[in-house]
Amino acid sequence: MRPRRENDEGNDIDVNSTKRKLTAREVAMDVLTRVEQEGAYSNLLLNQSLQKHQLERAEAGFATELVYGTIQRLNTIDYYLSSFVAKGLVKLQPWVRNLLRLSFYQIYYLDRIPPHAAVNEAVNLAKRKGHQGISGMVNGVLRNVLRNKEGLQIPENLNTVGRIALTYSHPEWMVERWVQQYGEEATMAMCASNNEAPHVSVRVNAVKTDRASMLQDLEASGLEAHASALSPAGIVVDSGGNMALTEWFRSGRISIQDESSMLVAEALHPEAGMRVLDCCAAPGGKTAHIAELMGDQGAVIANDVHPHKQKLITDQAARLGLKSIRTMVSDALTLSNQFEPESFDRILLDAPCSGLGVIRRKPDLKWAKQPGEVDEIVALQTKLLDEVHSLLRPGGILVYSTCTVEPEENIRMVEQFLRNHPNFTWAAENTASQAWRALYSGIRGESGGNDMSHIQILPQDYHSDGFFIARLVKTQ
Image (cartoon, rainbow, N blue to C red; front, top):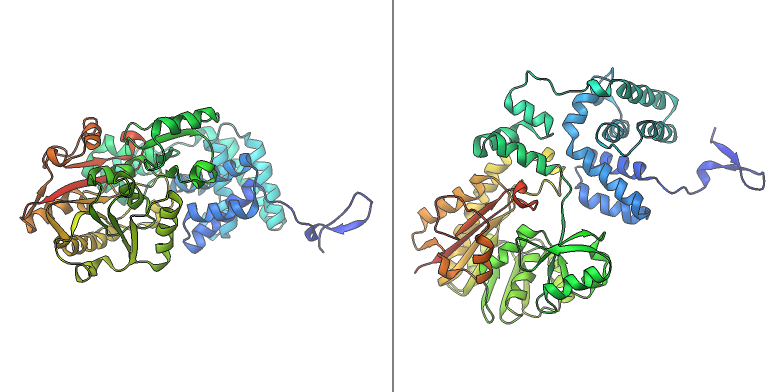
């Protein structure tokens, strides 16, 4: 029988026939379930869900925290929950499993949420979504968690990799690689940083305004903001919500971009009148920054392999008022067939990569990646470098960048390229822009290259994305 109640006039009505606004917990449960079942990206799916259900700002923030927090702590949550679910988490319906996960996250990790409220809301949600048996099970599991919360501890007898993986909720294979590459302390710091909320940072469009003026406007509007310590075009907004919904964004005065990502165009040192190739350009943030640094004078060729992403670049250029950007759709592995040799002053290869530097922004990525994927992407990166380098004129600068922390994709990739192409070398200090020199004074590069030639930023260094940037010059 369908549930019924009386309306204000005392008439009996069907509850399911009325539209009820979803709660933050319901939206979060749906997103988590679809991420698990469909392999969808959590950030894209969450944004779509928030727009669809039009949650109030506080509720939208709560749903966002539940989704990202639960995914960030996934294997630790499952480790603890498994001892409370008699038949095992894997045998539960996906929505039930994710309801328990997000409820455990509230109980164990969020001090501001009253534990009994988290339990009661979970039980009510289970009643609406399922049947009495499910709601009873959810109630029993979560109340058992409450009773035993203080005793939930990571076992002391785990090895180093297992302990870090469970404490900071990362896959063991990933932790093992990082311990070998960076050591135990740096790995713990990286994993801890990946579980923190990312900064909101924006890039000021130098063609339309300057950072000082933009900071004044933000502060005059009651927002808390400060100049980026990494990028001369960057501003970190400490409070302000979704900056893409502001008039500053719509009018093209700012773009949303991570601070580390802003360093890439600075490393390229593009100048007015130059001809620049951005090999893998979508969605176009670095492309636009290059054009802005050139004062929109010259030509920036923005290439991407995906036709549907071309519009992302053209729309961004239009919003920012940039005329020097020309888009094209092509496989970057064929670019040498489409342009004359040595026809560009600057080339940016922001290469496809494992993305292990942006886990803070895309927490589901750490669970989706497999160790073999790193080897596959290294092979592609090698081919891309071999393909595009001939298009650079002698004396020109090639910047190779990734948003990962994997040495195989970064420093070792570039060192291999230099061994195979003796007409390239590390770009010296006198080829760097003034801004890059100022930035580099506070950033320590890895050993092995000339001063100011390359940097590896880890997520814990500046609370920005993990990024690698290498500056190479063609000698002949």
